[in-house]
Image 1 (cartoon, rainbow, N blue to C red):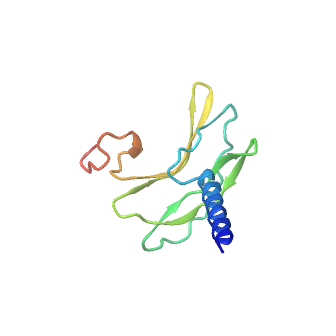
Image 2 (cartoon, rainbow, N blue to C red):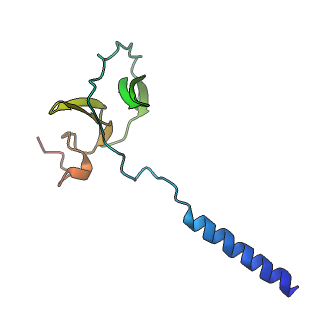
Image 3 (cartoon, rainbow, N blue to C red):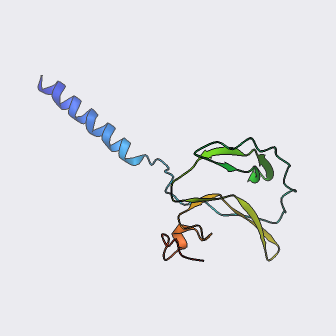
Length: 125
């Protein structure tokens, strides 16, 4: 009986040790910046469906995947009270193209909250 209890204890400790070594990515982890030399193609024309109460339209855009531009169709996203949605966009800087991912902004000033000293200031212009 003692041998069984010791074996179970060792097995449980092994499982816990292995589980602690596995890292699971979370949404809080930083996303790598996408900076490339190739400009994105012109945006596609999308037919925007009629408005939906409690939702915000996220327009279609190009993303960089597998070494090429890939079109991502627009979709409805559930609105977040007190936030403004900023659509993804490509910007040219010094001959390179930088992809700015879409995000939710608390005070509507266009500054990502992680870089904003006063992210909850609704009177900011």
